[in-house]
Amino acid sequence: MTSCSKNRDRILPTEGPLMESVYSSVTIQPDSLYQVYAIVAGIVDANLVDEGDVVLKNEAIIQIINNTPKLNAQNAKLALELSKENYNGKAAVLSGIIDQIHAANLKFKNDSINYFRQKNLWDQKIGSKIDYDTKKLNYELSKNNLQTLQNNFERTKNELQTTVKQSENNYQTALLSTKDYTVKSKMHGKVYALYKEPGEIVNTMEPVATIGSATNFIIDLLVDEVDIVHITLNQDVLIHLDAYNNTVFKGKISKIYPKKDERNQTFKIEAVFENPPDILYPGLSGEANIIIATKEHVLSIPKDYLIEGDKVETDEGIVNVKTGLQNMEYVEITNGITKNTYIYKTNN
Image (cartoon, rainbow, N blue to C red):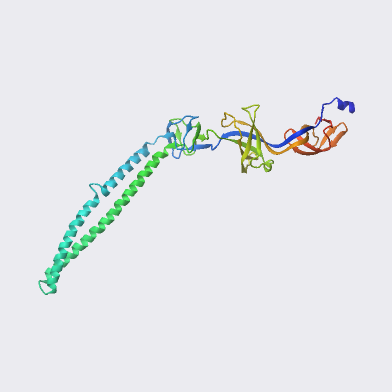
């Protein structure tokens, strides 16, 4: 037995720092990444930017053909101008009514003078009853006519004011409709994708572009549900990107999404770089280790030297050990062997 053991590879436990971590897959995405949708259907007239261009907030990026809304806006503008002309222009409807009121007012004053003069005579038993009744009737008719014209003036004025306001609203609505055919960016950022070419049909259900931050990137992590309880905000993250083969980047957990993805039984987590690479693109992938615990001075062995999770093979045979922190490669040994105990890898 001893001779056989001496011919096998053996190692001594090592002393030093050990980090316990949670493994995660990594995908790089721009911050505030969103898909752009048109709110009207139509045909792409022109892409006003190219993929990779940096755009400002509210900058136009896609123009959809909008001949009908333009015509509607022009008609609404004409209707607005006509309503304003009717209200206060040279041929205003109200000016005609004002002239009628002026004439009616003069007639009313004249009829009033004649009536009260005749009334005074009649009160003195002078004149005929027919003259008195005639003057009284003319007075009441002119008074009613004046009141009717004044009421008509106020009613017409209100109707014309309402028409002007309605025309203004219709014109503004028509202008908004024309703006709907110009797709604009909702943020300062970069155009990462354009999905439609001039001449292609656009609807409200399919995105026409993707825009996100040009400088800030988010690290999307997927963590298994058995590990999510160990994750907290601001934990350190070591990131390995396939595009940067031998470089390790540091980051920190910035957001934990509480809803589990039922399809793959994982939780989504976000992290941010402490010192990001100079060049990043959406979709870069890799892997990460989220540090959940660290000890400076521990006795550790490779995990593949463990037997059944709590035993190791030594020169004295198989002995029980007590474990502590562990990561993908190493496990802490807190009891059972010392730094001078040789251990052997089993064939299992």
